[in-house]
Image (cartoon, rainbow, N blue to C red; front, top):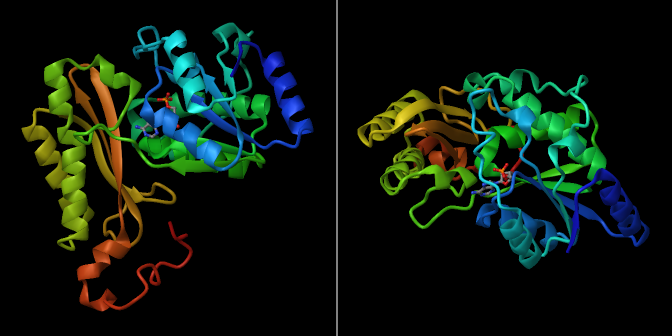
Length: 306
Ligand code: AMP
């Protein structure tokens, strides 16, 4: 595995690989790698790419009172994990390499970034799409791999590539979880042992809601949101938001009559955690007499099969 610290080194490496006829898969990360990140590397390899991983804690996407300074960093450990997982080029630029001067021309994520996490993290997704656009220009990937764990980010990046004609396929990959269901995250290491145990209530509450929808046929979004909120509150977890949105465009829904996502952000102590689950209209319809025997998504034209 090659480790590059400069844009120029990356461009040179990419040029050589292109000459050899290789395709490029990009895995952008902020490092402090865990199995979630490594699953993206495996997805890229499985599709036959030369794999470029970036590790960059992007100051642009952190608010003034957020954890940029204390975000966990360990490049030696990450280098070993990336090499072992089969990364071909690791791009770990210092901040001054990505932002040699204060950026003036940036990308705006627009309306998709105003709700959910965007409501409590103003400017966050603008910082994300700006750095992703830069990474796409620097590495020129055929495909880029993002986790569904950050579902709003995934949809916003997909929208950016569509709206700005980036010749990049953005591939969403499933959330990797700890044994008790907690979504893996570099920020989990902020949690004390007691908070770590408490945090497991988040995936549990989402899984219960999914079951209530898909097993019991509960299709009312407000009911599910109330049940999740109650479960989180009784575990002593502070809620930022719990929301049910359309899977394709993140619009809030009242009835779960199409593929949806149940999305949540919470505070466990000083640590903000996010998670989401798919709520499948097809499975929700399984108990409804009017849908029995129909193709599960036949009633939802224009929504791609997953
Ligand atoms: P981060 O380093 O947190 O910015 O994450 C880098 C990439 O890894 C993003 O596309 C995340 O969505 C993805 N990712 C982070 N945690 C997970 C996880 N538990 N499962 C799958 N993908 C993840």
